Image (cartoon, rainbow, N blue to C red):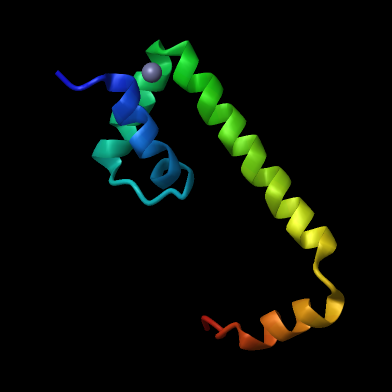
Length: 76
Ligand SMILES: [Zn+2]
């Protein structure tokens, strides 16, 4: 039988990217409900992502930000 925690780890990145199907999402959440270890990992990974995003935001030179904004295709 597959280790549920190993499966949970596989799902972590897509979970944090919010690209899982509803079914996979509730599967992951059900496991997180009963597994303290994975819950901690998810929380750690999530805060890591927020930290990285902020760091990137802060360190990016304004001219580069403008370039990136110019490349962005308007959605509406
Ligand atoms: Zn687990």
